Amino acid sequence: MQPVEAAVRCGSIISVPPNDHSAGIMELQRRLWHCPEMIEFRTLADDHPDLAQSPLLRGALLTLKYAREHGSIGLTKTKAFKRVFVHWAVENFDWPSKTAEEMFRYNKVVNEYEFPPLEVLHFLLISLRMGRHFKGEFRLTKRGAELAGAPGRLFAELIPYFLFQIDHASYARFDGRPFGKWDIWMNVINVEADPGTTEAALFETFYGEPQDWHTAGWREMAVFSSCVLRPLEWAGLLTETREEAAGKHVCHVFKTSLWRSALNLDTDDMLRPMSVQ
Image (cartoon, rainbow, N blue to C red; front, side):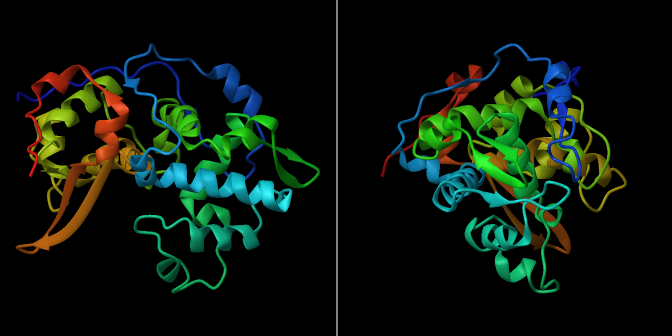
């Protein structure tokens, strides 16, 4: 497959505001410019087994159920979740590369901003009106309480919004955003990662440059990884494995079964039929 030309990104996207999660929510909503429907998600039943592969969905379900069972979640003065819940989330989310042992190895105390998945999820739940801030607490809305028991519906609400409407550079380590559009990225990844590929190979496919973590263009590849591959991993659509090979850092990328269950893409007819043992 030839390298894909960079394309202009679609419309405006929402940045996750630091610290005060309630500040500017309405302004952000007014600025939201919805992209045309480009990626079709299939409807999944609430008991579909592949839903368990989404870390973001799992975290959302746990947060909503916690708030429902405890009545609310306490907030700090800056309207972040209090540490007691942050610690509970770190221990229960089972987040890839963010185990409780790793998080607490050097810090006895973890704040919300130090656990980015929870900070992003907090913003998503407020933005999607599944929860609200009231008198120093995070409380579920009627909608949030209903979706706490409906994983399939929650996935349909949460994941497309997270992927396509959030500015993923706003919580990434590096500034900058990659050129491209989600429909191009996902349709190409659908083919390239079907048998498995690498982070560097995908970057070269899209931008025609053989960059990697040991080359001068490592920062550009890091931006692509942070804004495209990592959100897909958080959504549960991709999985990554990392290794050191010949003294070089290699990241392997694979589609999950949730990708195949949830997505209906234009390039599906280019895929080889899966063999059945």
